[in-house]
Length: 95
Image (cartoon, rainbow, N blue to C red; front, side, top):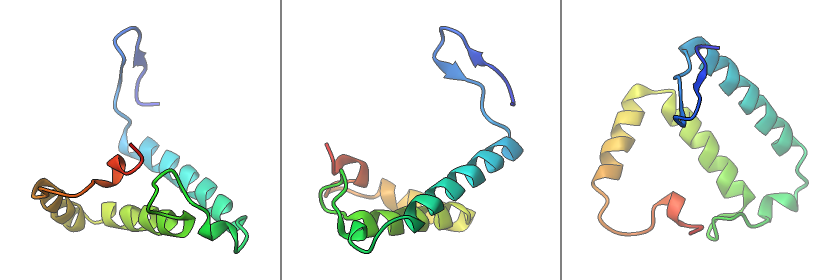
């Protein structure tokens, strides 16, 4: 690990790049296994985001992972989000 959690401060030492990549790969593998285990009916089930079913959520997660792999796409998305003036943000949908 890159460092230890600061006890009582509620702040963790940032992960190093290599450690973050190992953890991300493990989590993507776990998610892929979960998605492969879904039945055709499961894909249409609702999620906590009331406007999205499991298929839409999985597509969103995949799209975000793909976008984060490109600095250019990340910068574009970050600028676009800063210009939003109306409508619900994704994280607000379940609130």
